[in-house]
Every structure is written in C-alpha cells, then in structure tokens.
Length: 478
Image (cartoon, one colour):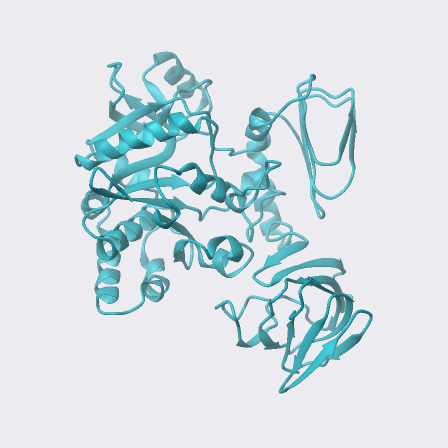
C-alpha cells in the first residue's frame, strides 16, 4: 500500500520458539501459531488483522522458520509472502534479508513496519495512530520504535531511555536489555525510560545502510544473496543456501544500541508481549476471586490463579496464586511470579531427549492431522488417529523400518500401492508392508478418519522416503 506516495510493507517476525509458554507452545508449533483467546485466532493472524486498514493483506511478509512452513503451520502461512529461514539467526539477519528483498522486488524504497508475531494489542485505534505517525517520521529517514510506559519494575523487558521533553516523538538516548531488579526499579522511578516493544518502522535502505555500518558480516552475506537472486535464482533457494552463514544477533544489540538517530513514539495501546503464563493471567478475564479459568475447569475456593485445561477436566481446591496448565501429554504447576522459569523445564526436556517440548500428541499437517493414541518405548508398535481433510492427500512414500495397518473409521480412503489404487470404505482395512510405496488420499466430501497401527523396530517420524508431495515439504516431514 502507498501512504502519502510512499510504499509501506509489513514484516512480521514469526520465527521464535516461545518456550516460556510451554506446555502449550512447542518447537513445532510455537506461540505465534497458537490462540489463547476464545475467538480461535492465532497470534500471527491477529497481528496481521491488526494492521488493517492501514495496510492490506498483500503488503504483509512473514519471516519464519522453514520447518514451520513445511510442518504444522503450513495452512496458516501459505496465504502470505514468506521469507523462510533454514535455521534461526535472531532478528538482525531476518530484517536485513527482508530489507534487501523489498528494495529489489518493490518499486522505490519502501517503509518497513517490523512487528513481532506474538504480541497482543488491545487498543487498535491508538495503535493505528502510532503506526501512521511512525511512517511519517520514517519517511524522512529516521529509525523509529514504539515505547510502552512501564507499569512496574519488570526484569523481563528491555528498556529505552529517552530525552526528557514531553513531545509525541522522543529522541532515544540508550537501550538496556533486561536489567536486574534494582536497575529496573531505578528506571521506573526516573520517568524517562520506556519498555522496548520490539516494534520498529524505517525505510528499507536506511536500515540496510545501518547494517552495513554496524554488522558488516551480515551485510556481506545479504549482498551475496542479492547478487544471486538478481542473476535469476529464486530468492527462496538463495536464502536456504546462504542464510545460515550469518551470525546470530538481534537488531537491538547489533544496530540500535550503536546508532544515534532513533526516534521513539510513546504508546498507550494496551500492549503485552504475552511472554509468560504470568502475563497470560494478567491479560485474561478474571472471575470475582481473580482467577483466570480457561477450558474445562472446576475451581473451588481458589484465588488469583491461572487454571487452563486443554484436554480434560481440571479441578482445583483451595489454590492461591498458582499457575496450572494442562495439555494431553503434560501438566505445568508453578507459583505465580515464577513462570519465567518454565524455560528451565524446556531445557531439561532437551537434555533428556524427551519429545514433550517438540510437538503435541495431536500434530497438524498440510493434509490434516494425526494424534498419537498409544506409544510405549521399546514396545515395537504405535497407534495413531489420522484425519485427512477433503481433497487432501499424504505424500507418496515408503518406510524402511515399519509396516502399517489402516482401519477406516469414517469417510472413504483412496489408497495407492505402487501403481495400483484401492478404495476403502468405513470398517474396511488394509496393510502396508515394510518398503511398500504407498499414498493415502481423501477424494470424498467429508474428513477421512483412520486408525493406524505401526509395527517395527524404529517408529520415528523421520522414517520416510518421499517420492512425491503436493506441499513441497522436505523429505524428513510426514
């Protein structure tokens, strides 16, 4: 979209892991693709919709991990322009590549509105006003950020010091990343510090020039990319090949802490980064005892607690100031005020090679979903419930370590065995031997539901040899 004859594009950063919202957030389906509200909109979807009517859907670019676009988030991401990172390298490389792409693919020198995908903003009218002001300031060549008035000495946020004038646009003096409690308390008392919202607006050429000055290693790789896609290579292939050569560094540390030409717009927009379960409790609707009850929950004599159930009845009696979050395969229990430490649980799960931090028992796929009903280490079998959407199909594939037994529960299955095709109705079954090339397809009008029993000496999701796929996924995905 053009505003005052200046092209404006939104860059949505959606590559984070969201480990502090475990067990709801997982590596394969992190916070930005989840919904914490009854409307069912994901954080990413809400972030994009929040830009309307300032921008349009076609003005949006989403930067995220290639594994997300190939896996559980495929359905949501397929409608956007995407920049797919082969691995995470923090915000500076992501922004550098986005700026270069916009300069080379769009007309002129567009203004970039850079937003995290996983924040919540309740006052959208004030947000629109702030965005429009920022675009005007950025058009003149300044880097612009948005500052949130601190309400407490929170050590989980970065802080930005500004000059003491009372104008609507303030000059930035310095950035401080997540101070200790004593320093945060002093910042709050001084009155000239704002929380760093992580939202920025600038011209593509200006931020790229800053990256050239302060992050030459990032800039050199970006220039190599630009030469390749200007020579006719698809930009997605170039990014996949070259992106990982860049250092892992944030735009705040790499550029904003070093430059002197930054403007801050103070905002009262009902902002939250929803960075912990304590933050979820803070922004949620409460009952008359201060409880946030979400899902199938029964609370007796509880107070000031977050109780969230995702798969079964959760009951609590006499609980005070606690957080309880239940999913099908994990339960988190913590006192309020300690939920930032949930990431330590995730670290421990990684150390133990556990799977509960990677994906849920129900896993979304481009063709539908599967749910692990039963799996026991060393048992040699796994049972799944597979749902294939109308008109969808799995890849043409084979397995080297397992056979599969399929029973149709509802719908009609079209099963390919090599070059032959078989139709299975409700209550009918089939068997796929080890090494047999096969495909499952739903040509019907209703969802196809089957029960799959795998038998073999290795039942990992990476035991797939893929021959053909409708969704462009890498071979390691099911």
